[in-house]
Image (cartoon, rainbow, N blue to C red; front, side, top):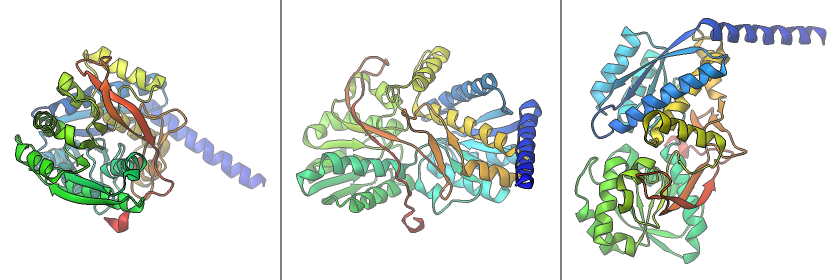
Length: 407
Protein backbone atom coordinates (compact mmCIF):
# COMPACT_ATOMS: atom_id res chain seq x y z
CA UNK A 1 0.00 0.00 0.00
CA UNK A 2 2.85 2.36 0.88
CA UNK A 3 4.60 1.51 -2.40
CA UNK A 4 1.41 2.21 -4.39
CA UNK A 5 0.95 5.52 -2.59
CA UNK A 6 4.57 6.49 -3.20
CA UNK A 7 4.30 5.68 -6.90
CA UNK A 8 1.05 7.60 -7.17
CA UNK A 9 2.55 10.65 -5.48
CA UNK A 10 5.62 10.44 -7.69
CA UNK A 11 3.50 10.28 -10.85
CA UNK A 12 1.36 13.21 -9.70
CA UNK A 13 4.46 15.21 -8.80
CA UNK A 14 6.01 14.44 -12.19
CA UNK A 15 2.84 15.53 -13.98
CA UNK A 16 2.66 18.69 -11.89
CA UNK A 17 6.28 19.55 -12.69
CA UNK A 18 5.72 18.87 -16.39
CA UNK A 19 2.69 21.14 -16.43
CA UNK A 20 4.67 23.82 -14.57
CA UNK A 21 7.44 23.57 -17.17
CA UNK A 22 4.82 23.97 -19.90
CA UNK A 23 3.38 27.05 -18.25
CA UNK A 24 6.80 28.58 -17.68
CA UNK A 25 8.48 28.12 -21.02
CA UNK A 26 6.85 26.01 -23.72
CA UNK A 27 5.82 27.83 -26.89
CA UNK A 28 3.38 25.89 -29.06
CA UNK A 29 3.37 26.75 -32.76
CA UNK A 30 -0.06 26.61 -34.39
CA UNK A 31 -0.85 27.12 -38.08
CA UNK A 32 -4.48 27.98 -38.87
CA UNK A 33 -6.12 27.97 -42.28
CA UNK A 34 -9.18 30.17 -42.78
CA UNK A 35 -10.66 32.12 -45.67
CA UNK A 36 -9.83 35.76 -44.96
CA UNK A 37 -11.10 37.01 -48.31
CA UNK A 38 -13.86 36.07 -50.73
CA UNK A 39 -17.28 34.63 -49.90
CA UNK A 40 -16.16 33.01 -46.63
CA UNK A 41 -13.90 35.83 -45.48
CA UNK A 42 -16.08 36.79 -42.52
CA UNK A 43 -15.58 33.34 -40.99
CA UNK A 44 -11.82 33.73 -41.08
CA UNK A 45 -11.80 37.28 -39.79
CA UNK A 46 -14.10 36.35 -36.91
CA UNK A 47 -11.89 33.36 -36.15
CA UNK A 48 -8.82 35.62 -35.92
CA UNK A 49 -10.56 37.77 -33.31
CA UNK A 50 -11.67 34.74 -31.31
CA UNK A 51 -8.16 33.25 -31.40
CA UNK A 52 -6.82 36.42 -29.80
CA UNK A 53 -9.61 36.26 -27.21
CA UNK A 54 -8.67 32.68 -26.36
CA UNK A 55 -4.99 33.56 -26.02
CA UNK A 56 -5.84 36.43 -23.66
CA UNK A 57 -8.15 34.15 -21.66
CA UNK A 58 -5.43 31.52 -21.26
CA UNK A 59 -2.83 34.11 -20.26
CA UNK A 60 -5.16 35.57 -17.63
CA UNK A 61 -6.02 32.16 -16.25
CA UNK A 62 -2.39 31.04 -16.03
CA UNK A 63 -0.86 27.57 -16.09
CA UNK A 64 -1.02 27.14 -19.86
CA UNK A 65 1.65 27.18 -22.57
CA UNK A 66 2.05 30.20 -24.82
CA UNK A 67 0.49 29.61 -28.24
CA UNK A 68 2.22 31.21 -31.22
CA UNK A 69 -0.63 31.23 -33.75
CA UNK A 70 -0.29 32.13 -37.44
CA UNK A 71 -3.39 32.48 -39.62
CA UNK A 72 -3.14 32.32 -43.43
CA UNK A 73 -5.78 32.94 -46.07
CA UNK A 74 -6.96 29.66 -47.58
CA UNK A 75 -9.50 31.40 -49.83
CA UNK A 76 -11.42 28.11 -49.46
CA UNK A 77 -9.23 26.67 -52.23
CA UNK A 78 -8.13 23.04 -51.90
CA UNK A 79 -4.70 23.20 -53.58
CA UNK A 80 -3.84 26.51 -51.95
CA UNK A 81 -4.78 25.07 -48.55
CA UNK A 82 -2.63 22.00 -49.10
CA UNK A 83 0.36 24.19 -49.98
CA UNK A 84 -0.23 26.34 -46.89
CA UNK A 85 -0.46 23.26 -44.66
CA UNK A 86 2.80 21.91 -46.09
CA UNK A 87 4.51 25.24 -45.53
CA UNK A 88 3.26 25.40 -41.95
CA UNK A 89 4.65 21.94 -41.19
CA UNK A 90 7.76 21.70 -43.35
CA UNK A 91 8.96 25.32 -43.22
CA UNK A 92 7.54 26.70 -39.97
CA UNK A 93 7.60 23.51 -37.92
CA UNK A 94 4.15 23.94 -36.38
CA UNK A 95 2.97 21.53 -33.72
CA UNK A 96 -0.71 21.82 -34.73
CA UNK A 97 -2.78 22.66 -37.78
CA UNK A 98 -6.20 24.14 -37.14
CA UNK A 99 -9.26 25.72 -38.71
CA UNK A 100 -10.69 25.16 -42.24
CA UNK A 101 -14.26 26.10 -43.20
CA UNK A 102 -14.95 23.90 -46.23
CA UNK A 103 -15.31 20.15 -45.66
CA UNK A 104 -13.81 19.46 -49.08
CA UNK A 105 -10.71 21.45 -48.15
CA UNK A 106 -10.61 19.83 -44.70
CA UNK A 107 -10.46 16.34 -46.22
CA UNK A 108 -7.33 17.29 -48.18
CA UNK A 109 -5.67 19.00 -45.22
CA UNK A 110 -6.55 16.05 -43.00
CA UNK A 111 -4.96 13.58 -45.41
CA UNK A 112 -1.78 15.66 -45.29
CA UNK A 113 -1.94 15.80 -41.47
CA UNK A 114 -2.13 12.02 -41.44
CA UNK A 115 0.89 11.57 -43.69
CA UNK A 116 2.97 14.19 -41.86
CA UNK A 117 1.82 12.99 -38.42
CA UNK A 118 0.69 16.52 -37.48
CA UNK A 119 -2.30 17.13 -35.25
CA UNK A 120 -5.16 18.85 -37.07
CA UNK A 121 -7.81 20.49 -34.88
CA UNK A 122 -10.94 21.06 -36.96
CA UNK A 123 -12.84 24.14 -35.81
CA UNK A 124 -15.44 24.74 -38.50
CA UNK A 125 -16.17 22.17 -41.24
CA UNK A 126 -18.85 19.58 -40.53
CA UNK A 127 -18.73 16.54 -42.85
CA UNK A 128 -19.00 13.20 -40.98
CA UNK A 129 -16.32 11.79 -43.31
CA UNK A 130 -13.63 13.47 -41.20
CA UNK A 131 -14.69 11.48 -38.14
CA UNK A 132 -15.54 8.21 -39.87
CA UNK A 133 -14.15 7.01 -43.20
CA UNK A 134 -11.27 9.52 -43.18
CA UNK A 135 -10.58 9.44 -39.44
CA UNK A 136 -6.97 9.03 -38.31
CA UNK A 137 -5.03 9.44 -35.04
CA UNK A 138 -4.10 13.09 -35.69
CA UNK A 139 -7.50 14.57 -36.51
CA UNK A 140 -9.91 15.96 -33.87
CA UNK A 141 -13.00 18.14 -34.37
CA UNK A 142 -14.01 20.57 -31.62
CA UNK A 143 -17.32 21.83 -33.04
CA UNK A 144 -20.61 20.10 -33.85
CA UNK A 145 -20.56 18.05 -37.04
CA UNK A 146 -23.38 17.72 -39.54
CA UNK A 147 -24.13 14.23 -38.20
CA UNK A 148 -24.91 15.67 -34.78
CA UNK A 149 -27.09 18.32 -36.42
CA UNK A 150 -29.03 15.71 -38.39
CA UNK A 151 -29.48 13.64 -35.23
CA UNK A 152 -30.95 16.62 -33.40
CA UNK A 153 -33.02 17.53 -36.47
CA UNK A 154 -34.52 14.06 -36.71
CA UNK A 155 -35.42 14.23 -33.02
CA UNK A 156 -37.06 17.61 -33.60
CA UNK A 157 -39.15 16.25 -36.47
CA UNK A 158 -40.14 13.21 -34.41
CA UNK A 159 -41.06 15.35 -31.42
CA UNK A 160 -42.99 18.08 -33.24
CA UNK A 161 -44.32 16.52 -36.47
CA UNK A 162 -44.42 12.71 -36.34
CA UNK A 163 -47.93 12.72 -34.84
CA UNK A 164 -49.23 14.09 -38.16
CA UNK A 165 -48.70 10.68 -39.77
CA UNK A 166 -46.82 10.09 -43.01
CA UNK A 167 -44.67 13.15 -43.70
CA UNK A 168 -43.70 14.23 -47.20
CA UNK A 169 -40.13 15.57 -47.13
CA UNK A 170 -38.06 17.33 -49.79
CA UNK A 171 -34.30 17.67 -49.30
CA UNK A 172 -32.07 20.22 -51.02
CA UNK A 173 -28.36 20.62 -50.36
CA UNK A 174 -25.03 21.42 -52.00
CA UNK A 175 -23.66 18.97 -54.56
CA UNK A 176 -20.68 17.64 -52.57
CA UNK A 177 -19.79 15.43 -49.59
CA UNK A 178 -21.30 17.68 -46.91
CA UNK A 179 -24.70 17.74 -48.61
CA UNK A 180 -24.78 14.03 -49.46
CA UNK A 181 -23.86 12.87 -45.96
CA UNK A 182 -26.30 15.27 -44.32
CA UNK A 183 -29.09 13.71 -46.37
CA UNK A 184 -27.99 10.14 -45.64
CA UNK A 185 -27.66 10.80 -41.92
CA UNK A 186 -31.03 12.52 -41.63
CA UNK A 187 -32.75 9.52 -43.18
CA UNK A 188 -30.91 7.06 -40.93
CA UNK A 189 -31.86 8.97 -37.80
CA UNK A 190 -35.49 9.34 -38.89
CA UNK A 191 -35.58 5.58 -39.55
CA UNK A 192 -34.07 4.83 -36.14
CA UNK A 193 -36.77 6.95 -34.49
CA UNK A 194 -39.54 5.20 -36.41
CA UNK A 195 -40.76 8.37 -38.11
CA UNK A 196 -43.12 7.68 -41.00
CA UNK A 197 -41.99 9.74 -43.97
CA UNK A 198 -41.65 9.73 -47.74
CA UNK A 199 -38.87 11.59 -49.53
CA UNK A 200 -40.77 13.12 -52.43
CA UNK A 201 -37.72 14.82 -53.98
CA UNK A 202 -34.00 15.59 -53.61
CA UNK A 203 -32.10 18.40 -55.30
CA UNK A 204 -28.36 19.09 -55.54
CA UNK A 205 -27.43 22.61 -56.74
CA UNK A 206 -23.76 23.38 -57.18
CA UNK A 207 -21.96 25.12 -54.33
CA UNK A 208 -22.05 28.93 -54.65
CA UNK A 209 -24.98 28.82 -57.09
CA UNK A 210 -26.77 32.16 -57.44
CA UNK A 211 -30.19 31.18 -58.79
CA UNK A 212 -32.28 28.57 -56.98
CA UNK A 213 -35.61 29.59 -58.50
CA UNK A 214 -35.97 26.48 -60.69
CA UNK A 215 -35.29 24.20 -57.70
CA UNK A 216 -37.73 26.15 -55.54
CA UNK A 217 -40.51 25.93 -58.13
CA UNK A 218 -39.92 22.19 -58.45
CA UNK A 219 -40.07 21.75 -54.68
CA UNK A 220 -43.34 23.68 -54.55
CA UNK A 221 -44.74 21.41 -57.27
CA UNK A 222 -43.74 18.40 -55.11
CA UNK A 223 -45.90 19.81 -52.26
CA UNK A 224 -43.82 18.51 -49.32
CA UNK A 225 -44.87 19.02 -45.71
CA UNK A 226 -41.25 19.72 -44.76
CA UNK A 227 -38.32 21.09 -46.77
CA UNK A 228 -34.95 20.22 -45.21
CA UNK A 229 -32.20 22.46 -46.55
CA UNK A 230 -28.45 21.90 -46.08
CA UNK A 231 -27.06 25.10 -47.60
CA UNK A 232 -24.81 27.47 -45.69
CA UNK A 233 -23.36 30.97 -45.99
CA UNK A 234 -24.40 33.16 -48.91
CA UNK A 235 -25.98 30.17 -50.65
CA UNK A 236 -28.49 29.92 -47.83
CA UNK A 237 -29.11 33.68 -47.79
CA UNK A 238 -29.82 33.60 -51.52
CA UNK A 239 -32.07 30.56 -51.20
CA UNK A 240 -34.15 32.08 -48.38
CA UNK A 241 -34.68 35.37 -50.23
CA UNK A 242 -35.73 33.61 -53.43
CA UNK A 243 -37.91 31.04 -51.64
CA UNK A 244 -39.68 33.74 -49.67
CA UNK A 245 -40.38 35.73 -52.84
CA UNK A 246 -41.77 32.65 -54.59
CA UNK A 247 -43.99 31.66 -51.64
CA UNK A 248 -42.34 28.40 -50.52
CA UNK A 249 -42.57 29.20 -46.82
CA UNK A 250 -46.34 29.69 -47.00
CA UNK A 251 -46.70 26.19 -48.41
CA UNK A 252 -44.14 24.05 -46.54
CA UNK A 253 -42.26 24.09 -43.26
CA UNK A 254 -38.62 25.05 -43.93
CA UNK A 255 -35.84 23.54 -41.81
CA UNK A 256 -32.05 23.86 -41.73
CA UNK A 257 -30.48 22.00 -38.81
CA UNK A 258 -26.76 22.71 -39.20
CA UNK A 259 -26.17 26.31 -40.25
CA UNK A 260 -29.51 28.05 -40.79
CA UNK A 261 -29.49 29.73 -37.39
CA UNK A 262 -25.94 31.05 -37.73
CA UNK A 263 -25.84 34.70 -36.66
CA UNK A 264 -24.26 35.83 -39.93
CA UNK A 265 -27.29 34.44 -41.79
CA UNK A 266 -29.70 36.25 -39.48
CA UNK A 267 -27.66 39.45 -39.74
CA UNK A 268 -27.33 39.36 -43.53
CA UNK A 269 -31.05 38.81 -44.03
CA UNK A 270 -32.09 41.34 -41.37
CA UNK A 271 -35.75 42.23 -41.83
CA UNK A 272 -35.88 39.88 -44.86
CA UNK A 273 -35.64 36.82 -42.60
CA UNK A 274 -39.13 35.27 -42.44
CA UNK A 275 -40.66 34.26 -39.13
CA UNK A 276 -41.38 30.63 -38.34
CA UNK A 277 -38.42 28.92 -40.04
CA UNK A 278 -36.99 26.00 -38.05
CA UNK A 279 -33.23 26.52 -37.74
CA UNK A 280 -30.17 25.65 -35.71
CA UNK A 281 -26.47 26.50 -35.55
CA UNK A 282 -23.23 25.54 -33.83
CA UNK A 283 -23.31 28.66 -31.67
CA UNK A 284 -26.10 31.06 -30.73
CA UNK A 285 -25.91 34.59 -29.34
CA UNK A 286 -29.11 34.30 -27.30
CA UNK A 287 -28.70 30.70 -26.11
CA UNK A 288 -27.66 29.45 -23.66
CA UNK A 289 -28.34 32.41 -21.40
CA UNK A 290 -25.26 31.74 -19.31
CA UNK A 291 -22.66 34.16 -18.02
CA UNK A 292 -19.97 32.42 -20.10
CA UNK A 293 -21.85 32.84 -23.38
CA UNK A 294 -22.91 36.41 -22.65
CA UNK A 295 -19.31 37.33 -21.77
CA UNK A 296 -18.01 35.76 -24.97
CA UNK A 297 -20.54 37.58 -27.16
CA UNK A 298 -20.07 40.92 -25.41
CA UNK A 299 -16.27 40.77 -25.47
CA UNK A 300 -16.27 39.98 -29.19
CA UNK A 301 -18.59 42.92 -29.79
CA UNK A 302 -16.38 45.23 -27.72
CA UNK A 303 -13.35 44.26 -29.80
CA UNK A 304 -14.98 44.52 -33.22
CA UNK A 305 -18.19 46.54 -33.01
CA UNK A 306 -20.11 43.57 -34.42
CA UNK A 307 -21.49 40.29 -33.13
CA UNK A 308 -19.68 36.97 -33.78
CA UNK A 309 -20.53 34.40 -36.41
CA UNK A 310 -20.55 30.75 -35.31
CA UNK A 311 -16.99 30.30 -36.56
CA UNK A 312 -15.65 32.56 -33.83
CA UNK A 313 -16.70 30.23 -31.04
CA UNK A 314 -15.29 27.30 -33.01
CA UNK A 315 -11.88 28.93 -33.31
CA UNK A 316 -12.00 29.90 -29.63
CA UNK A 317 -12.73 26.27 -28.76
CA UNK A 318 -9.84 25.05 -30.91
CA UNK A 319 -7.27 27.21 -29.17
CA UNK A 320 -8.52 26.15 -25.73
CA UNK A 321 -8.39 22.50 -26.80
CA UNK A 322 -4.79 22.76 -28.01
CA UNK A 323 -3.65 24.55 -24.86
CA UNK A 324 -5.39 22.06 -22.57
CA UNK A 325 -4.01 19.03 -24.42
CA UNK A 326 -0.44 20.35 -24.33
CA UNK A 327 -0.81 21.26 -20.66
CA UNK A 328 -1.96 17.74 -19.82
CA UNK A 329 0.73 16.15 -21.99
CA UNK A 330 3.47 18.22 -20.38
CA UNK A 331 4.63 19.65 -23.72
CA UNK A 332 4.64 18.77 -27.41
CA UNK A 333 7.40 16.14 -27.46
CA UNK A 334 5.23 13.07 -26.81
CA UNK A 335 2.51 12.78 -29.43
CA UNK A 336 0.93 9.77 -27.73
CA UNK A 337 0.36 11.84 -24.61
CA UNK A 338 -1.18 14.63 -26.69
CA UNK A 339 -3.42 12.13 -28.45
CA UNK A 340 -4.56 10.70 -25.11
CA UNK A 341 -5.21 14.19 -23.77
CA UNK A 342 -7.31 15.08 -26.82
CA UNK A 343 -9.26 11.81 -26.68
CA UNK A 344 -10.20 12.44 -23.04
CA UNK A 345 -10.71 16.18 -23.48
CA UNK A 346 -13.43 17.99 -21.56
CA UNK A 347 -13.92 21.73 -22.04
CA UNK A 348 -16.28 24.33 -20.60
CA UNK A 349 -17.26 26.36 -23.67
CA UNK A 350 -19.52 29.39 -24.25
CA UNK A 351 -22.09 27.23 -26.03
CA UNK A 352 -22.50 24.79 -23.13
CA UNK A 353 -25.80 25.08 -21.21
CA UNK A 354 -25.79 24.92 -17.43
CA UNK A 355 -25.05 21.42 -16.16
CA UNK A 356 -23.34 20.24 -19.36
CA UNK A 357 -19.72 20.37 -20.54
CA UNK A 358 -18.43 19.56 -24.02
CA UNK A 359 -16.39 16.36 -24.18
CA UNK A 360 -14.52 14.39 -26.83
CA UNK A 361 -15.75 11.04 -28.11
CA UNK A 362 -12.48 9.06 -28.03
CA UNK A 363 -13.55 6.66 -30.79
CA UNK A 364 -14.58 9.18 -33.44
CA UNK A 365 -12.52 12.21 -32.34
CA UNK A 366 -15.71 14.28 -32.44
CA UNK A 367 -16.59 16.63 -29.60
CA UNK A 368 -20.00 15.97 -28.09
CA UNK A 369 -22.16 19.04 -27.53
CA UNK A 370 -25.75 20.04 -26.85
CA UNK A 371 -27.72 21.41 -29.81
CA UNK A 372 -30.56 23.93 -29.79
CA UNK A 373 -33.22 24.08 -32.50
CA UNK A 374 -35.79 26.87 -32.63
CA UNK A 375 -38.08 28.99 -34.79
CA UNK A 376 -37.26 32.43 -36.09
CA UNK A 377 -39.09 35.21 -34.26
CA UNK A 378 -38.70 38.98 -33.78
CA UNK A 379 -35.69 40.03 -31.70
CA UNK A 380 -33.73 43.25 -32.24
CA UNK A 381 -31.18 42.74 -29.45
CA UNK A 382 -28.37 41.81 -31.86
CA UNK A 383 -28.52 44.23 -34.82
CA UNK A 384 -28.48 44.15 -37.78
CA UNK A 385 -30.36 40.85 -37.22
CA UNK A 386 -34.09 41.39 -36.67
CA UNK A 387 -34.92 37.73 -36.03
CA UNK A 388 -33.39 35.27 -33.58
CA UNK A 389 -34.35 31.74 -32.60
CA UNK A 390 -37.26 31.37 -30.17
CA UNK A 391 -39.26 28.44 -28.80
CA UNK A 392 -36.02 26.48 -28.48
CA UNK A 393 -35.77 22.70 -28.07
CA UNK A 394 -32.46 21.31 -26.77
CA UNK A 395 -31.00 17.92 -27.69
CA UNK A 396 -28.07 16.33 -25.88
CA UNK A 397 -25.66 13.78 -27.36
CA UNK A 398 -26.54 10.10 -26.88
CA UNK A 399 -24.47 7.97 -24.47
CA UNK A 400 -23.17 5.93 -27.43
CA UNK A 401 -22.50 7.86 -30.63
CA UNK A 402 -23.40 5.76 -33.74
CA UNK A 403 -20.83 5.20 -36.46
CA UNK A 404 -23.17 3.75 -39.12
CA UNK A 405 -20.65 1.00 -39.86
CA UNK A 406 -17.92 3.45 -40.80
CA UNK A 407 -20.02 5.57 -43.15
